[in-house]
Length: 380
Image (cartoon, rainbow, N blue to C red; front, top):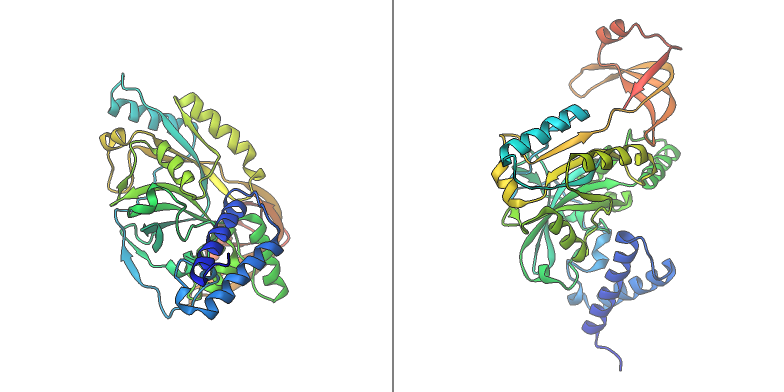
């Protein structure tokens, strides 16, 4: 029996949402691009014929709306704090010792280890299972409203799958990244158009998420990995590990490269394994995030003014490569500041092509004693 327009529109949305989840979250497509496009065009035509059926959470709205004139701001449900860093194994051991001291020497606990994605944080709020608001980190208390742009990110659900979260207001926090293949395509297009290359995927993703025109965001093909589930600004479950699993079940893209570690030795094994495999990933990472799993123990450990005491970011050593200084150009900033920029023979560091580096000022050039034609060590 032929479906009524409203029923057919809903059927098409569910089918398309399923196939987007299979493709963008699981990387396991079930139909061809042509078959997907045919379903998408049918929904577009149906919504054009019946405009009252076009909803903000319809998958056809991912292409981006009208350009904005400015960026509005809104407060976060709770502070989006940054993490303290551990730059080596000794500092990680100090963190572990502090946790054990504060929890008590006999208190059992475990860590959750997650890859530290090199992107930018974004909070997404849902009500009745539908995306309502997306905010950048901003200053940690107030973020920029990037909802229209966030809707174009195909791995971010516009509405959650049938699930307990579909019936309650909740918030997801995660990382917006640009995959390496998307970054290389973007730079290739820029070169062909005579535009400057982006230095790294993070810069390209940040510019796209904050762009006034959502069509720019859509064209950059950003990705979103969820890592926090909150309600009223507080964690939803009693363990961080369970929150990650629940986000996974609800249809969010959660990084599968994570581990629950019973002790420091297991944690260090996870870190060493991924430091050696970081270049095999389709996206950039710069370390591993470590969190105490239990919410009750997180509350017991508390926070400093800037960061939680129950989490730390273990940063991988900076990557270096030798190349040749080909020229130096002086750039004039918006305030008239003169900044010398080194133009380098392109070299790949951590999967990113580096061809420029700032020399800060004339005194820095004199201090380094650098001259055109010199072989230099570049660190990223």
